[in-house]
Amino acid sequence: MAEAWGAEIVSCDSMQLYRGLDVGTAKPTADERARVPHHLIDVAEPDEAFSAGRFVELADRAIAEITARGRRVLIVGGTGLYLRALRWGLFDAPPKDCELRERLYGDEREKPGTLHEQLLAVDAPSASKIAPRDLVRLVRALEVHALTGRPISEHHASQEIKERQPMRVAVLEPSRALLDERIEARVHAMLAAGLVDETRRLRARHGAQIAPLQAVGYREVGLFLDGKLAEAELPAAILRATRHYARRQRTWFRKERDVVRYEDPDLLFSTEAALG
Image: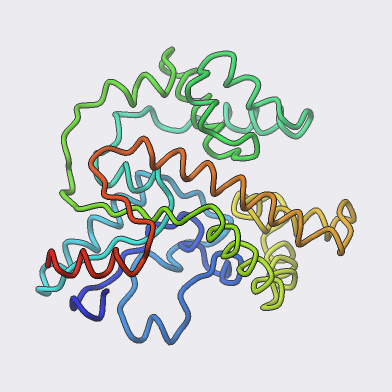
């Protein structure tokens, strides 16, 4: 689509922005990036904190530069929070509290799962949307509640509904059978392409506890490297985690307003191309 439209691609993937996370994020290849300019890929180190606010700042800049060149913009990726923040904006959130964050991460290290339990007690709507292993978002939600006295879900709900970056949003919703088939093929392809070695290198350089290595695929490989998961069990573990993540993505995007849904990628292309 980018080649047909003379467009440039802005990645909306919260993991592809990290350098070195290539295999496990299905990052565009060097050939693909040579064919079409890509933005917001390889813009941060894996041990660097990265927020939705920073994504919006960098994406706004990229969009302005692309449109100034007279080219179109395709925002591509599945991180729903980043897309929502770019399109509708963020509430006036309190700054991070490093001491509070360290205490929360310490709680989780002592008792895995405790952060999700804490959030469930004070903000059930947010807890229902955040996976128990998504420590970055759990910590932020608890931090906002502690600093403002209000659940982060209330802050989001009270936002003024005004599109800050007008865009047409197309959501791909393939059949469950096709999605499962694609997920299985991708998992085996990533393992064959060196996911285990990539994870081992990242752990050696940045440590095993950095947030990106808690993402789907990397976390399961980490369990294998720590001797907590047998090699024969690794593909099935990644498959299960990926399917769970895909279901959460479907749930998220079903709640997005003003989107067009397509089951068939070819129909997406032909329809959007016709719209110009």
